[in-house]
Length: 213
Ligand code: T5A
Ligand code: NA
Image (cartoon, rainbow, N blue to C red):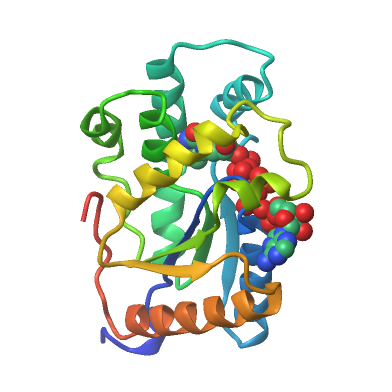
């Protein structure tokens, strides 16, 4: 017997936005809220700095190593590919994944360096497509005023402006936008409602699909 709640899948929910837009704050709260409401959910993030590929990325981001722009792009992508099968099995076992950055970061940041956007998208083809992408929208100037900004490689105002323009090109039907300058509690509530709708659609049998769709 198929189609019952017992074999319904989890949702793939991705948070995107400029550095310091509030993704980590909100993805953490969302997982806690979904859990509280009886949905099994896990918090994931990319880059996943715990793998050996992730350690190369982390070293690059903190300016401890230098890499060609194409090379680091492919490492970010490889870091998602190394988690793909686990991601699929978690979703199929009914767990909702809340993911702090995904392929859209990969494309928006690398193309801000001048790499061709189609070239940047190509290695992401075949990764699981998110059911919902929530973009936390913040003016780059406001993000720069937030705590801790300036420590890592990409945390520079002019660069973040280009990243923001690239994100606009990537927006599609699964995207929802939240004003990231709103109070944290308001963002939390909007995000929770969006995620609950999405979880419901997935439980009702929406099939998993692959990028870019
Ligand atoms: N990257 C990533 C690529 O180039 N390619 C890729 O494929 C991927 C996956 C990764 C870097 O790598 C790039 C993108 C990034 O430059 P990271 O480790 O993911 O970096 O770091 P960030 O995502 O940039 O995380 P940040 O720590 O910078 O920002 P968050 O998570 O967006 O923000 P958060 O929640 O830590 O909040 C930042 C500050 O703002 C405050 C918080 O308290 C905190 O001080 N804040 C608010 N203040 C006022 N109002 C609100 N609503 C607020 N929400 C949060
Ligand atoms: Na973060």
